[in-house]
Length: 180
Image (cartoon, rainbow, N blue to C red; front, top):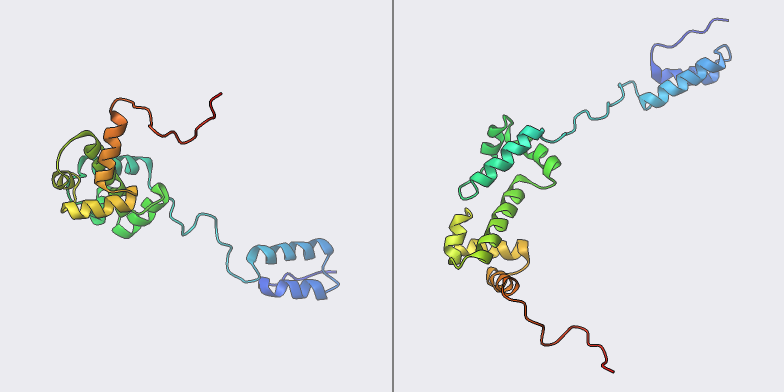
C-alpha cells in the first residue's frame, strides 16, 4: 500500500478524496496544505509583507523637531522625506501610518496651533501672525483657522481674552434652581 504524493498541491484534494489507498492522516495533511495555500499553488502571503510599517522613532523625532523649528517657512514633502532618507511617496505613506494624518495636514495643524497661541497671547495683527506661522497672507490664515479650529481668529481672540481675564459670574446661568 504505497501512496504517491502529487507534485502540485492543486491536485492534492482530488487525489486524496478519491484514492482509498491514501491513509487518513495524509489526506488530512493534504487538506491542511490546500487550506494554507488558499486553493492555489502560490505561497501564502506573510503578515506584514507589502505593508507600510510607519516611521522609526528617530525619524519621527527628527521630523517633529524640523517642523517645529521651521514652521514659519515652506515645508515640502520632498524635503521632509529627504531629511529622513526616504522618497516622498514612501515618506508620505509611512508618515500617515505613524501620525494618523497626511504630512500636509500635520503641518497645517501645527501652524494653526501656533496661530492660536499667538492670537490668544499677543495683540499682533493677523497679517503678522499669518507670516509668523508660514502662511502667505491673512486671508489664508482666516480660511484655514476657521476650517480647523471651527471659529474665526477674531472669535478665538475674544474667547482667549475672556478666559484669561478675571473671572466674572455669568449674568444668566444656564440652569436656574428654585429659591426657597
